[in-house]
Length: 213
Image (cartoon, rainbow, N blue to C red):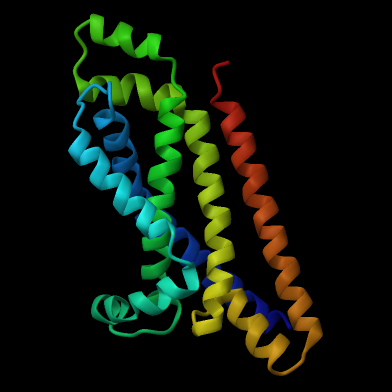
């Protein structure tokens, strides 16, 4: 069983870690833009804000299993194949990026507006307000949001096993369901639960450690 579990765990961690990184690279700036361009924002631009909101809401409304199918051609273009662990990273990242943008927007909006106004009154640039006020003040919430993103991606990566995505989901499907090996099925489920709990505990602990309050 270990010969099957260990490679599947590594595949899941590979998919989740890389897709999380890509989603953060895309979604974090989008979350900042949403906050900056909203009505009353430091760089108010309702046209840009409305367009981004529409795109983010559109992508978030597509069920993940359908998104995988829609993204098949893009996965083949980028990685040369439509199945496998690496190919699954593409839809995982695309599905997580709008989620990251939204949770980052929410985290940044939680910052006390009085602190932001103080920065403006002191002559701070928008970049300085973002890097020295918004992000540091919202850091505990941002860490919690990243933790939530990782947990969602673990769930999505398991779902990707239905279309040959590899990882624990594929192991549970191929051996636990098709070959009716309940021991493998239960083992895969238990490992996923333990993985989620581990990331949640680590995220909570890190968020508390950086919380100035």
